[in-house]
Image 1 (cartoon, helix red, strand yellow):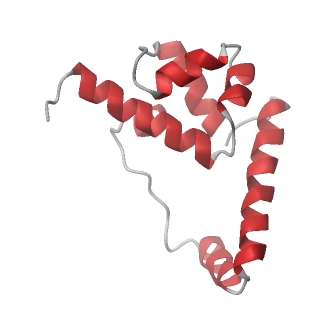
Image 2: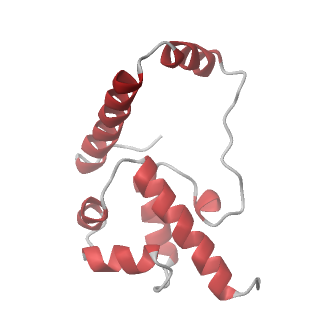
Length: 122
């Protein structure tokens, strides 16, 4: 495996796809939010199209991730000692699988709704 431009583009494409799915957005929704055509988003996620710095920033804002993470320069890190995270994990572990699935869909819907309203990312 080479470490050239193609491998970087492929890694970026994978991170963009992963971030979009984590945000609970479809390619069509992202295209609408970023004022792109859906096939453009598809080409970017396939690693077949370059992404400008401006586009990269917009993707990061939409997905609530950093540009550095999208570029693979930093790992996604959670503060494991955050008491809120620990509380959430305890509560989630008590849910039945179907309820957990519903909650995850609700969270994705909330993120999608917030993004469509032009909500500020954290």
